[in-house]
Image (cartoon, rainbow over all chains, first blue to last red; front, side, top):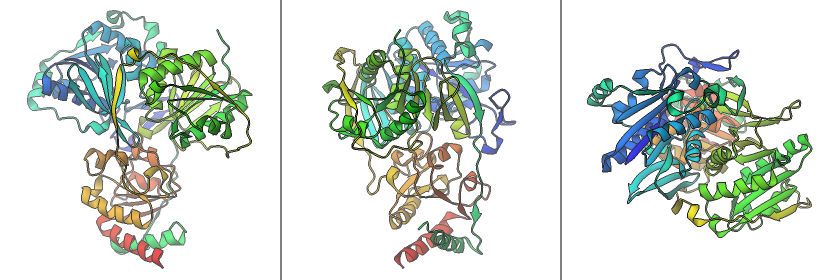
Length: 266
Length: 332
């Protein structure tokens, strides 16, 4: 089974909310000091989904990451978890893209990789949260897609997916090749082992420029966008919480109930 | 090229009725259509649509297009995108709105890439720019830490809308509208997926999305046992139990209880957050609640910025006395 996993380097979504700052002039988010970027957590779970298939029946996992000035310690993490190869689409013209230009570049890189049975993506990236790139890649490659998976199993040349819906899940079968996007319900991604970290340190990523995947600079990054960001801002939180005073936490609990009664909330 | 005209709502139905979110989309679509002085259109797709098309007129649609086919019994990406591609090419609306649901978040991107346009996903607000007449969509980004306003010049302009972000119109049984069936030829050989089964993981009692009181627990609850105490309180309040992501990821509670950006959106009268720190991710799912009450041992926890009343303390000590007092007050 040949598998490709698309992983994005993002601002750490677990960084303290107070450290989140925007530069209104450029409509961009500022990198918080002392908090290094990470592989988007849903993408890590996509790597995990691929690794589970590799564990059960073998296969090869190629990780594909797009960006510029990518931190090697960050983007190599999937290798230290057990992925086999890393391809970086790395160039300044890849920067500032939207779902359109990103999906296009990734799809063209996947065409260049050539052989694949399954492509995995996270359900959405932890920065822009749009959840379009996976479906977009599948549409460009003209292969079926199943989104928001919590379980993926390969059976008899097909893949069986549990797809999350509002009140449960749906079991869906799909022929190969196919693209699956993975949700957090899959369960936590495995930790990198010491052996994995050492193996990853020795591996050199393959680096492709736009010309290597046969795309024009006008089709990718900021130039290839089909949506325009007018404004980025932080919603104002009011912060008018009344803290219930009491001598003990137990007393505070009882006082809270009385407070809610007085406010006619219960 | 055809002229793009009209605001179209992709409606979802359950048991022959429009979903609540569809009525919200129609309410929003009516306003946008009014500003553009164009018709509000609704498209319904399924095996048998029952009363839903008439329902869409009652909730504000001028024209309802229907596509009925046994192959459309269940949502499948391949068949539904094929249907919608034909509908959009035939009708050429200038705006297409969908719900941010299991269907909408799958259908919208794939359809958009087929049509060559870029949708704004999970919008909280939609407005028409008075000068350009283009649709502006405001959506949460960075896990709810920020919001972004997007615009797209390619037509149709597409957006998905979050649940409970918009209000439906009052139903008006006397409203007049047109129902227009559309025939789409579907080739079963081109549908590459097959739905084997649909598994419902409904929790007994009041549905989380419908509850007027929600008692939600977070990582600090520490395990499945603690949620029994939350259930007891929810029962007394005739409400439902929910959770932030960590209890679901750790299998303390079913995934269907997750409230947040990638879970359910709730807007109850009373939201009691127990041992929830209040990540932006979680607040995305509950910040529309009328009154948020927080119990957390960390006075600096983000949840207190959203809460109206709070207790700073260990929930294991505060919650039993709170539950007992609530029970006593409600009994009196």
